[in-house]
Length: 293
Picture 1 (tube, rainbow, N blue to C red):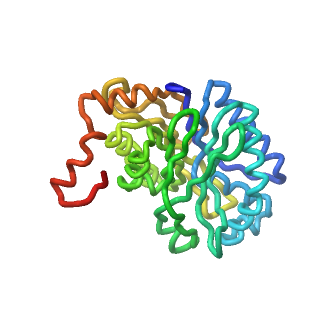
Picture 2 (cartoon, rainbow, N blue to C red):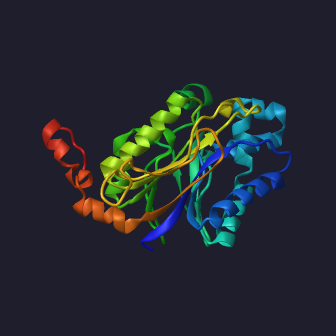
C-alpha cells in the first residue's frame, strides 16, 4: 500500500472504576479514527497511566505503586488493542506503558495489527524525571517494524529530540516515524514538536506526533499535559510548505488525521528541491564525526 490515512491522538487521561470503562473509552477513540479511514493510529507516551486509577486513589497517587498497577493490566491491555485492530482492520501503536523486564520498568510502546502484536519499542533516552524520580530505565535498541503500510519506526518523546536515533531507524528503511509524547509544559511540548519536525526535515519522511493533553488530578507522574497532535512531512515537493499535514488545537482532545503517501516520500528523497536524506553523509566530511552510512 503506497498511501494510507494516518491518525495521531491528542489524548486526555480519565479516571476509571473498572477496566471495562477504559475499554469503552479506547473503543470509541479507535472507532472515531477508523471512521475517518485511518489505517495507522498512534496513541501517546504514558497514555496508559490512566489505568493506575483502577488501584484506587492511594495507589494512583504513589509514583512507584502506580507503575506496578498499570503494568498489572498489561495482558488485558494487549488483548483489548488486538481486538480493536482486528475489528477495524488497522494498525494501532498503543499508548506506552511501564513494562517490567527486570527490577525496574522500561517505557514500552506496542504495535498491534489485526492478526496480533507486530512488536514493541522501548524508550531509549530517559528524561530527568524518569531517571531521577521515577526510576524508569532505558530499553535496548531501535528496530523498525515491517508492516503492510511500509516500514515504521518509533521514537518515544525525548528520543525524538536526538537526530541519530531517528536516523538509525531511517537507515534501516523507515519511511514513517511515530513520536508519542507526554509533556507537562508548553516548552516540553515544543521540544518534541520541534524535534519531530526536524526529523521529518532531515530524513525527508513523515512523523506523527501524538501527545497526552489536559490535567490529570489523580496521578502525579502525569498530572499536567500540554500538547497538540500533528503529522509532519518535509516542507518540500509534494508536501505542505509548512511541513504540517494536520494538527489539532492545543490541549484539546482529538485526532490529527492526514493522508500519507509513501510515493511522495520516495519522490522527495529522490528529486526534492533539497536532498537532506541523501546528503546526510556529507556532514561527516565537514565535521570529522561518524554519522553512519
